[in-house]
Amino acid sequence: MEFKSLTPYGEALKLASGLSIHGRSEYIPAAESSGLYCAEDVTSPHDFPEIDRSAVDGIALRFEDSLSASRSNPVTLTVIGQVRIGDDPEFSIDRGECAVVFTGSPIPTGANAVVMMEDAFIDGKIASIYKQVKKFQNISRSGEDLRAGDIIVRSGQRIMPWHIPAFIETGVEKVHVFRSELGILSTGTELVEGVVKNSSAPMLKALASNLGLRSVFYGNVADEKGEILSKINEMKSDIIIITGGSGPSSQDLVHDIIEENGKIVFHGVRMKPGRTTGLGIINGKPIFMISGLPVAALIAFENIIEPAIRSWFGMGSKVRRTKKGFLTRSIFNNENMRMFVRVRMFEEDGKMMIDPMRTTGSGVINSVISADGYLVIEENSEGYPEGAEVEIIEIGDCL
Image: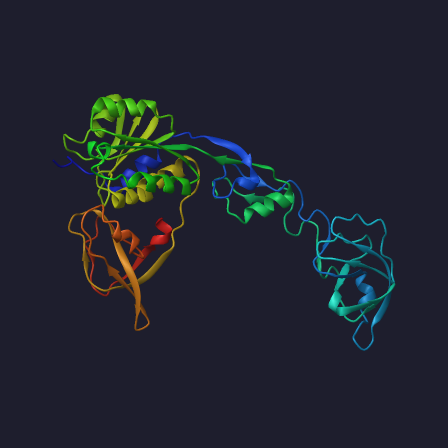
């Protein structure tokens, strides 16, 4: 049994992304936020550094005192103190005076430059300066890194490990992040009976985690309407993915369950793999219907589910890494579908070559783990001839 009609990929994506879906967000410790997406801008509470600090181990002085300094004609200054990290120096530097400082030390009042220790010599209370320095040389100025009110991470941006030091240094203790929950339910009597292993659900949990979402696997359920609906009603997640039972045949029950208890947004998409992908709503909750086969499930998540979630929660579009190369053989699109062709890449005679992999079915895992990327052939394209220059999406970016 076939679909009466298939929704063009672009239309399906527009329908999914255009829904008004509200997720959860919460404040969590900033130091534990890496990998999550901001629900609001994170700004610096104050200047960083808050005070002028030494950028090197050396001698803090007035730069004017160094103007004639050289190895052959050193300038001598009186050492009036030493400033360590965390000190609050109570003295000030006048002309002819200096102080020993360390990387990160506060700069004493009056000093406006630091000579590196290797360009000076200290003998008791006398410092010999061998090199000229400019005003503020070797000083990290107050606010030169971040000013109070500067945005550290924008709303919708992913918090990366290198943002954590900025949070800590500027005193950001809590950040507001998206923490919606994605629930996964797998249908299929063959799964319940253990005839077939469920490899797609763990993959979907990992993909959800990459989006900063919590994920819960609600288990395998047999192909029985009452059981599936009961399980859907138990699920407390903000977003639901149901794997299996997404096709158009009488044995595929998910479409009918959603239609009878809610509404169908679309069912059946003009893309391959992932043709049986659909989206419905029950009690205001989005429910994605996707194939239980791993590659089709991956394609559906990457190209329908993730973009929709990003749109709903203001996460911003995913910037994909691409590479160009030349096809080793012709690749045709005879089905008027958006095709996701797995490819390998290699260099030959100084040219990057792209070799389309020969695959069958939507569950050929090796076609993903052995691939370097995807070549996308649009619905209205007949394909590409051998030798054509094409652009692919790197596989590491898709995953």
